[in-house]
Image (cartoon, rainbow, N blue to C red; front, top):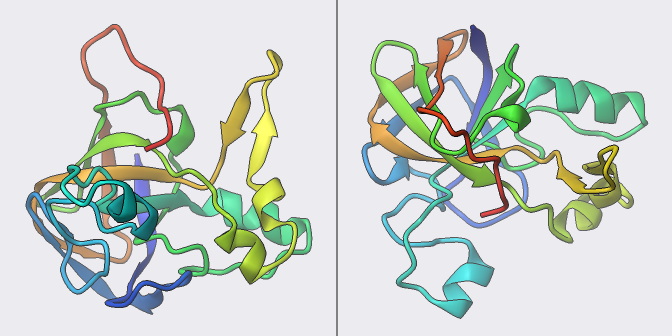
Length: 179
């Protein structure tokens, strides 16, 4: 079982988010007061293509172990820096299959939709950061390490240190793809 180690949100579209003590998670929408909250896409590039698309990126999670790795390589990254809403510890987020449920605290349930696709904003923040969150597996396939995206199945309040329970979907498990 994992846990929440930091929470972040921002009402405007910018790279980093402000660290907060709790998040109000709204069913079917996302994080109250966050620029990405809504039933339809809010990410600028996706809005430009089709503003009526379903929002599969309501809540963004990153594993704190990634920040540790990046800091070890000399990058100045801390909670909220990379735009996540929930920073986790103790869960290999990238290995979860599509449609995994994450039960956080007493009430909140998030359904995993896919991987965050790293973008040029990472290099705008710190040169080389985009490359640092990309890797290749033994088959040469691209690994995106910048976190996962979820939609809200059940809302509620998330606070620091809340437990995170992972509920895998029925097999066959589908690997995460970028959303």
